[in-house]
Image (cartoon, rainbow, N blue to C red; front, side, top):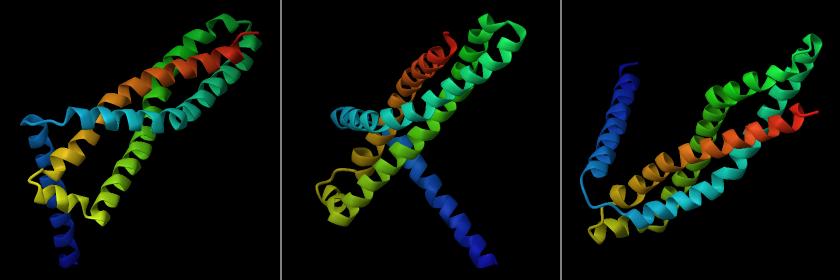
Length: 168
């Protein structure tokens, strides 16, 4: 049991050390802005369709359920006061961030794994380029930039899909 606990603490220490190194590279120069923009473009294109396909049905379902309930009371006009806060506050941010974490995280992990297998990570180190600064930090910054943008786009998509089912 103590061996497993030691390995667990060693793993946590390694993860914490990696996080500290990423934060250090974020704060101190140089930054690879071209690589960050390229990663943001790739991740945005990879994440937009899955995130949109996850949020659009939610807006439609909320709208359909709301219309059926509010119609019983003759209050279809207040559907927008239920749909908009639900999409803005709950569903769009949650689904967008989870889908970005899944889609972008797997994309970045696959890229790093491929670079490691091909020896590109070692080649960066040989050329005196910090692999964390060149590979990890641009992906991290790209995720920080695209998540709010995707949230805005998916919120609009959720509201539009809800509108299609709410308007008679």
